[in-house]
Every structure is written in structure tokens, then in C-alpha cells.
Amino acid sequence: MKARLLKLHRWIALLFALPLLLVVASGLILSFEPWLVVESIGPKSLTSDRVTALLGRHDPSGQAQMLAYRSYDRTVTISIARNAGKVVDVATGELLPAPSSLAMVLGLTRRLHEKLLIDAGWLVVSSTVAMLAVAILGLLLGVPRVSNTLSGWHKGMAWGVLPLILLSPLTGLCLAFGITLATPAGNAPSTRGPAVTLAEAVRVVGERHDLSTLVWLRSLGGRMVARLAEGGEYRLYAITPQGTVALPRNWPRLWHEGNFAGAWSALMNVVTSIILAGLIVTGTWMWARRQLRRRTMRRVAARLKAG
Image (cartoon, rainbow, N blue to C red; front, side, top):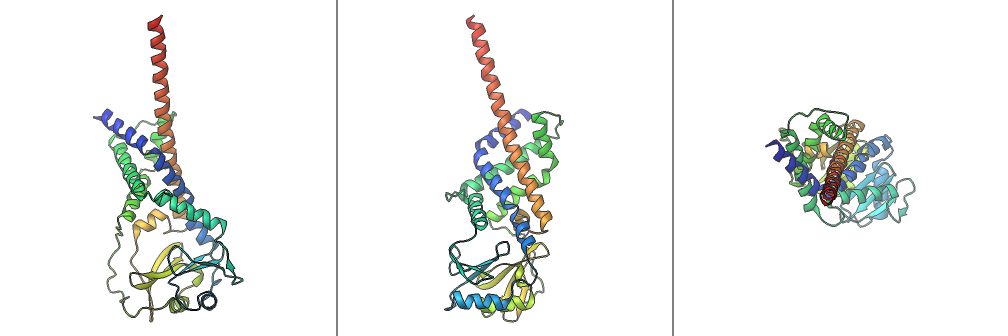
């Protein structure tokens, strides 16, 4: 049974090795984004008056439905549609031809992580299921005897951070299938009521929060919602004319994106991504080395037989 589990573990990993490596490598790059955002926030560096002025200049008709702020390059993106918008320099108020190089790299990496750049979200989900299956099969193989060999390092890495290896694909699948594990709001004030405009939402958020912590502000589910990086955690707030209401935490998203504890959760995802990449590379290397050894042995046997 153990030999069969090992063979299944090996072949599932080999079958999905390439898409998994792309997903893990892009995840490694994205792991730095929460840290980059949090560390770049200058307290009180963005005010509602400044954002309102930018909206009046670049969206005079009030049609925009989304506002995103990048603290690491000090720009806001004002959008009518989610995937298009005007990039504006906060300091000068001037319209920029495109996002910064860093923002473009992160955006491209996110598309690679989520869809492999070819609208192959189904393959990402399949690969994530395969990753989880491989981890569970490795768990069923039992606690290994770790040695200073390639195989020993492979097993040691896997068992050393096993909870992280299991949680990474599991939370990714929760995101893919819309599972939030959010706790009920309980006695929290209602967030339903007259919709507020983007400009009104900016004013309300600015009155109750430091607007420099803004990640994005947009219409979501028929209401205005803001995402703020407060205390190293990305929090969601529904916006009403009376104020802001904290929404229940989406723990799978917070964990998977590593934005619940600032630099520490970002570091957790960096370590997880490096270990996962190491497992894919060492596993593939062990298989290739085994195949090469077998071919060599067959050639030697064939020569001996012919001689």
C-alpha cells in the first residue's frame, strides 16, 4: 500500500509540476506585496480633501465606481470599469500614461497566479487540488527518517512546515469556490440603505479612518465597500451615510494573501512559497535522476548481454 501511495504521490506531482511551479513562483512574488503596501504607508499622507480634488479634476461627471490607492508609488487609480482606469499622481495631480513598473509587474504576476496569463483558471484550480492531494498522500506515507540526502531534504522540508503546505492550497480553493468562513455580523449596525457615491464614500472614510491606509474603495454587492490596511491587516468596511461598519473577516483570503499580520504574515507566505518551490524542484530532480540511472543500467545490461 505504501508503494502505491508513493507512486500516486510522485505521478500526480509530475503531471502538474509545470503549472504548479508557475503558480508557486508567482505566489512567491505576490507574497511581498502586503509588506510593501504596509511599509509604504505614510500616516495622514492622503486626505479626503486631496482625493476629492483629484476626483473633481479627473472624474467631473461623477461616473467612477472604484478608487484604488497604491501607497508604494503614491498613485490613485480612478475607474469606471474594474479593469480600466486613470492613474493619477497624488502629489502633482497629473494623469500618468500607465501604472508604475512595479505595479505592472505585480498585476502581471497576479494574472499569472490566478489564470496563468491564458485564462486558464480551471488549470490553476486543478493544480491546487493536485497540490493538496500530493500533500495528503505525503502525510499518509508516515513520518520519514530524515537524512542528509536529496530525498531526506525533500521529506524534511515537507514535514517541517506541513501545516503551511496544507493551508496554502486549501485556502486557495476556498477563494476559488467563494468560501469565506466569515462569522455572522451579530449585533453590528445594518449596512443596507441608500447607496452613497464614490465622492461621499471618500468623505465618510476620511472622517473615520486614516485614508492613507486605503487599498481600494468600490461598489460591491450594491453597497460601497472600502478595504483598508490597518495594523498590518486588510479590513473591509461597508460605507453608509452615517459611517463605516466593519464586515466579517474572510479568513481564507487573509491567510492565502498573507495580509492579516503585516510583515509577519507576508514572511509566512514567502517561506511557504520557497518550500513549495523546493519540493517541486527536488521531487522532479529525484525522478529525473532515477530515470537516468535506470537508462544507464539498461544500457550496461544490454552491452553485457551482447558481449
